[in-house]
Amino acid sequence: MTLTATVPTTSGSRYLQQLCKHWSHKFETDFTPEQGVIAFPMGPIRMAATPEALLVTLEPDEGADIERFKQVVAEHLDRFAFREAPLPFDWK
Image (cartoon, rainbow, N blue to C red; front, side):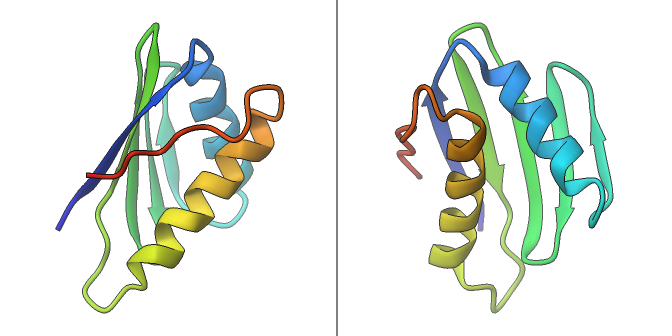
């Protein structure tokens, strides 16, 4: 199962890098200004920044609390995007 949200923002690269740096103290991360991956305990988080949006993809592990996973990611991104928060996450 994969969940994807296209989050409209012109600051996607900044938020992607901030989230990866924030979680790099606890989890393995790999990122550039355009893409990032976080080895989150509930499953990988993949992000890609475009000029108009941040694409966030969650790949929940079997048995993961999917609603909690979405909530944790959204809350953390909203902290970095406090001027724009709450960001709209339309998970598909």
